[in-house]
Length: 140
Image (cartoon, rainbow, N blue to C red; front, side, top):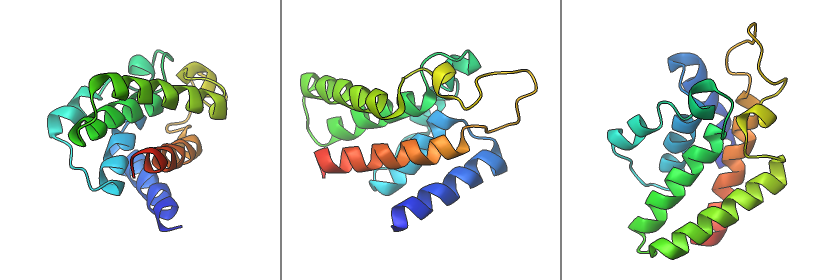
């Protein structure tokens, strides 16, 4: 699947070339895959969304996906109530698939002072692929 290879390659490039976080990486990749340009201000809003600035709170993969889902579905004319329902459904599906919405729970090996950078690269590829397929099924 061409999308999966694009996701894998782009995650690696964004993580290691420009030290991008997971939420912004998610937004950038979904934007490309759905041919839906995002404003720089939207990307700026996700600067601290990697577990709430590294605190280990809600995962940036979830946060970036929810931001994208909201913007994308609103642009397609979906009303707010339906978008909220889609976001909830997505979060339930994500939690069911990955076991949590929390960065602290999802991060391989948890958090330690001596953690190597971008420990979630594999998870990021898997989660963005999951999000892409889920949204494509629902929104076309």
